[in-house]
Each structure stands twice: as structure tokens, then as C-alpha cells.
Length: 173
Image (cartoon, rainbow, N blue to C red; front, side, top):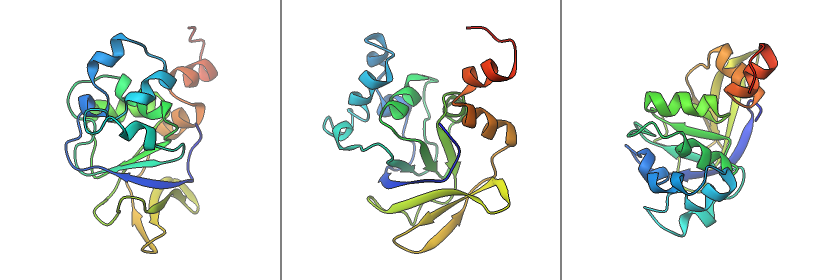
């Protein structure tokens, strides 16, 4: 994974999307392979939804995305679908950390004006890679997003926490 910019089609969800809605916990017993898990993405909402995701799509949600259990597999399935960013009004603390640790960019901003299918661009502000914006191509408006701490950008740039430690320490796996 790299850091922004990312451009993709918005796939819009509401508030309180919990990890069992992202992928049901029974699926983690079958496999931890991202390519297998991707086929079960949001199956509890609609069994055909996973097949409609395209690499580069961006999940857009309301408040408290990723609430519920701390299942890391809820990030693994999203990454397996070729999604590089989730844009939400807020995240559960554990989903946010699991996203960073696994190379998925969590972006906090006001998502109320983003509609299903909108083309959006997640980018860093010119001159400050820590400040993110979300540009909605349909409306022509840019939405300021929360700043991303440098260490988190470095972890994302490395592709996640394990690759970061491989690159920056004597961590062995």
C-alpha cells in the first residue's frame, strides 16, 4: 500500500457498521486469505454485494465504522477486495488501529454529502502530507479530513505494521 492520492468509486454505508457486518466472524474459521475473504464482504447485508466491489473502490460510511469485535479479519477482507481507503465520520478505535496495521487508510471527515457511486479522491494537502482532504468530483467540493500522524503514514507507506518493523528494526517473523 502507498499513501494517497487514491481515486475511486464511493461505496456508501451508514452509521454503526460493525465488524460482523463487514464480514461475519464464522468466516475467519475457514481462511485468513484476503483473496478468499473478499468474496464474503458485507454478505450479511446482501450476498451479492462482494462481487460488485471493484479494486480501487472507496468505502464511505457514517459514524462508528468497524464497531463491535476487534476482528482483524474485518480489515483483511476489505484489503482483499482491493480497497485502499475507508472514509467515515468516525471509526471504532480497534478498527482504526487494525486498518493502519494492515495497510488500509482510515480517513475521518464529514461524509454526509458523498453519494453511492460518486467519484472521490483522497489526497494529501499540498505541502503537508499529514493533512488529508476528500474531493468529491460530482460536487466539486473538497472536504477537510483529520490529520494523519507521521508514524501512521510511515506504517501505511510500508504496507502495514509488520512490513514497517521489518524495514525499521530487527523484528523477525
